[in-house]
Image (cartoon, rainbow, N blue to C red; front, side):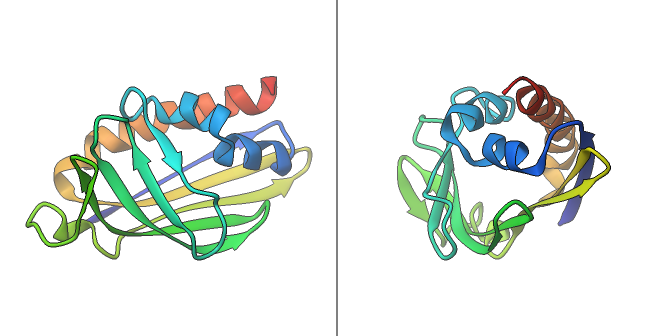
Length: 146
């Protein structure tokens, strides 16, 4: 397991970036980079379930374990979604259980630093790190134009 750590400074207030991260109308745009049709099914409240899926019946699910509006939100994954069913027991699902994905926002001089950290199994690290580079640029574009 490795950790993808990426960051970008965006010339937009943290509130706007927060909206781009969490509102469905924006999330569907930047999450599409990871897999066409990707989106989050959740209310983004602390303790709530979150499912990231591309509509094909596959994805990953977990819980919101930390939330400070406009500052940080973190997900702990509980397993994979296969054929729209939660999988917590297969050899494919087990490495993902207990992994985390965290988004942090810090304002500094008319800009906001967005930092992401995502636990990643080795086989997917390079591909997902590249996707995150593109996703951060899309988040920036959406935040500036929103």
